[in-house]
Length: 382
Ligand code: COS
Image (cartoon, rainbow, N blue to C red; front, side, top):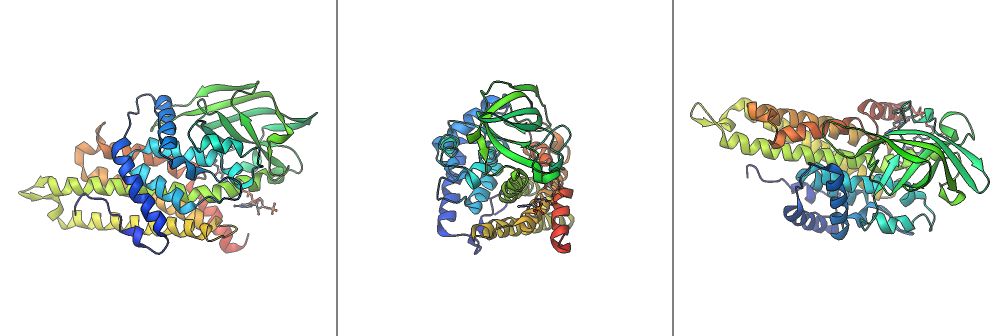
């Protein structure tokens, strides 16, 4: 029916009964809790984390000892939340990405933080990007030097989501075992550690908490090290392999919402005495939008399914899912704006919000061209 949500993809063989059950329960939860006001994004995100925790949804963002992240569940939750409210998706996603290294490689003590991030009593951040290294992670310049009983960190991190409101960060720094990618390590860093400051809050086109952090002689104990020294780059890439398909899923949620909005627009708006949807040119656009969304969904859930089946690395599948789904969603949303005419660019109209929300997804967690590099290297065996 025009304007209703297409959930038929849940019948695909990628899913198990518990996924379908979760998707239905979350849809009900979203209908009563979302959207929230975005005027004060810090307050909104804190409230969303608490609500998502109380609703039990954040439990899926981390894996306790002996558990595994279920990537299909992460994707379904992100897709559904993004469909209703992009800020809710952001709040959910950052708990997972922020604590991803702990879920995959953390010690029992480090996993204690998961008890808090999975219940919404602590907010997490993933601190990788720096002023001088975005796509080129191997150029990380923040230094962690060995001191008695631990590590001393100095440097800057920027574009850190949840920066300024996070309670706990996973931060990457150069420990110097080798040059480039082989000399980085990951650390668990609480927000109240002396020497850590928020030097800038960054305003972006679709507002969410974002900051530049400065570290000046931040001392962390030995137990803060996640994984082994020198393996931080691989650790970061393993986390991104898990979470890149979920970015694709969020894009899918935004894209599906745009198609839904477009369908209600073209069936209600009249032109020359009949509905806009009677025009074949409009029908052609709708068909292209639906096609792109189904193709994106197939790639997203293929990648998630492959990881859940136990694949050690899904770099290529994850890159394809993120690249295609985010680019396709951008095109679908752009067309939804076009089909809305002047209303499409008006503040307060949903497709205008979607147009701003989708853009960053083609950049964060590996820009589209980084995904192309990953895919090409898998073909060339490089
Ligand atoms: N899982 C495990 N190990 C991986 C890996 C993965 N997904 N990807 C790479 N590695 C390993 C490689 O096998 C290689 O190991 P060896 O040194 O033992 O050979 C090492 O890591 C270095 O890999 P590579 O040579 O491919 O590193 P590059 O510096 O060329 O970086 C890109 C490759 C560009 C793909 C990487 O830096 C990247 O993904 N950048 C984007 C970062 C990003 O997403 N930033 C956003 C931050 S979060 S908002």
